[in-house]
Each structure stands twice: as structure tokens, then as C-alpha cells.
Image (cartoon, rainbow, N blue to C red; front, top):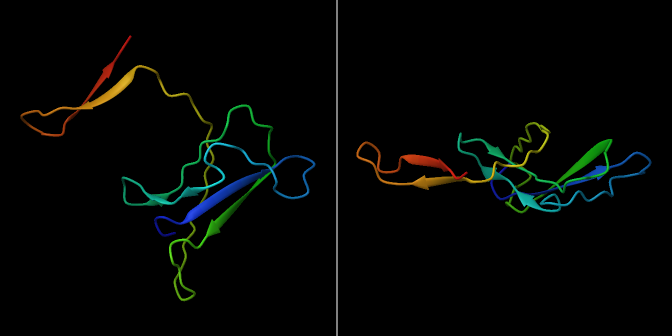
Length: 109
């Protein structure tokens, strides 16, 4: 999908007749982005403590100007358990002799 395409996701809980469950975070609207490896993707972060779902519905909106004659490659969806990032990690970009943009990571304890 083209970068900038708006995508939403809603859940279906046991007993729901359709997909009404808003899972918070950026699930109500996010955009396709270009990833570091050149591929495109969407990353959703949902609220903690959600009711378990039995299905999900992904909706894509033609905000990137896709025409009827264009091939639209959707790819795949992968779902992973979220995690809490470690606190106290900072990434700093400082000049070095070998690489002017060498990253240096420091951990504050």
C-alpha cells in the first residue's frame, strides 16, 4: 500500500455481531509508513487491559490517490504481544572520528 494510506482496526469480542470494539491507542486511525528496510508497514499500539477479541477488521481508506488501474499489494498482518520499553535508556547521536553519526546508548540507573 502507498505510504500515507489511512488504515483503521476494530475488534470483535465473543458475542459481538460485527466489529464494534475500539481498542484505543492509534487503532482508530494510523497511516502506512516507510520502514528502515524499504518495506512499508503499519504499527498499532493498543490500550492495556483490553477485553479479549475473537477477530479483527482492518479498513483501508484511499487517501493516497490509488486509481482503479493500480495494483494494490496488501501483504500480511502479524500480531505480537506488546511490551513496556525499558526506562532510562537514551540514544544520543554524537560525532566521532570514524562516523559523524555514530549512535551511543547510555543507561541511567
